[in-house]
Image 1: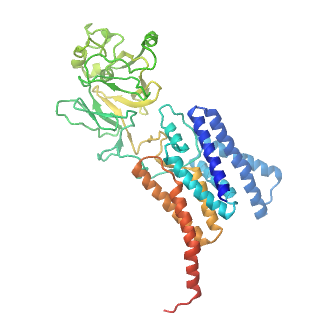
Image 2: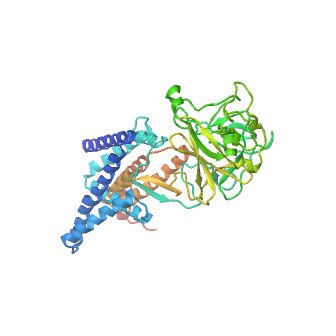
Image 3: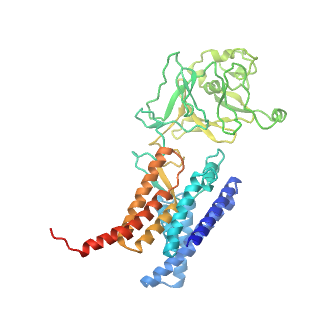
Length: 489
């Protein structure tokens, strides 16, 4: 039994490492093709075995053509609902995921008792090592998922929607006690800076934006329902530019000098970079001031009057003060005027897109095209960062739902444990059923505390095995002895 369990765990570990390698080297067609093929075979072949057993046990009348036609449609519709999901009700997808778990758990439940319990314990230990150790395959897979250019990969995940007042474990309260539950869109910068009164203050949570109206001005939060943060005005002593970081995780770079700033260092040589033509774009003057982007045509800047240098706002003489254009006050109409700017080579870009309400949004992207933040310009020429609230259509995951997800493998082995317990008695079945739910709840509590991926098997499996043994060899014999000996009150 131990040898069989060890072989199965080893096979699962090797296949997981194979999935990690395929995902790391972006062999997405092979990976998704394998997942679709395995799901189709599971629903079609193993589902057919379960259906055939049900026909024999319950003596159902069905001809051979109808049998294979039903299995074919069941497998095809199930695969589409699991991996495509567009236009398919959530209940249908959830139903097929549950069916997948039941079919595979029914097959695994045919192991003899000792093999099944040994397999469950070893899988719980394997899950613990695979997720928490630095070299664990699931830990490596999570790290790959969190990369900037990580492609999306459909997986066998059971997703359950949460009530609007509930908060997903691991989600931080970005509202900061303002009562609105608003949170700022995640920033790729590992050392976020908060602008308050024209200065930059380290906050560890991305770029929070505050109005610079005077030396002692406090940040003002928008109380409207537009889902935007505080307005930004540029700081004269901290130039910023959209550029590419060495790690490829870019949006904004800052320097404390007042001299010129170029794009972030690139792995390519300067000579190669000089030959690439500069990329230009049309953005409002207010955003060009915030990121200190050079103008393609300085004379076209409102109020320039031909006095602006050809270097624009980004570059100047070494040690010189900022350009005169930066120090002058613009009217609201001038700040909303679109100007042509030059983006840094190998750097990020700012593109204009229409929001859901039809108003323009200015999306800041890094050099890989990953969205870093979304800016909104109001009628007064002030810039706001669009933030996401818990009640909005978009969530942190970008899938538009406030939900929690659990790997289908956890459901499968929960089902195996409950099925083996149910084969002995109803008391063991109820005990294991309840402690599995308790263990899953404990895992969610730990998830909300540690804010990182955690294994879902160990707590529930160890509790289930322990309570199964206690119920079978301690509680049930004690109850039977109590029932055999009458007590008179």
